Image (cartoon, rainbow, N blue to C red; front, side, top):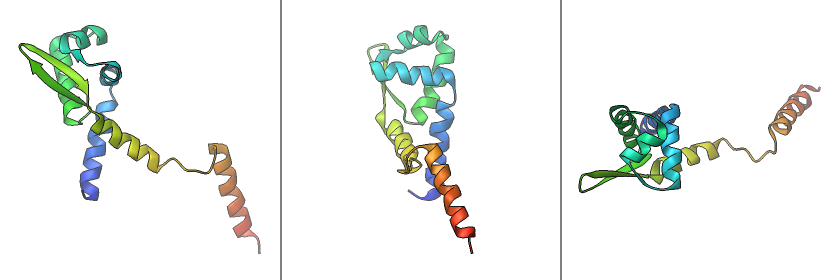
Length: 115
């Protein structure tokens, strides 16, 4: 995967998670799989509205769908969540707290500025 593909993938993931209803769907499905009707009731949206959100989440590989008879079941797809976690870990420095990181940076600048 090249850099541009990674950008597109991350934009899709974070765009999907930028909506409160989609985050609620992801949260619900991390607890257990559910039928679309259950998800719609839980989130408080109509079926047409929930379907629009589901398409976005599926394209971001955050959920998967399986049809059994006439019922569509949804489950979390850990592929997308794993990718988000990997991205966050890139920016998780091992320098301690944010305050410590800033203090280390300022101390380094002061040290470099001394003649």
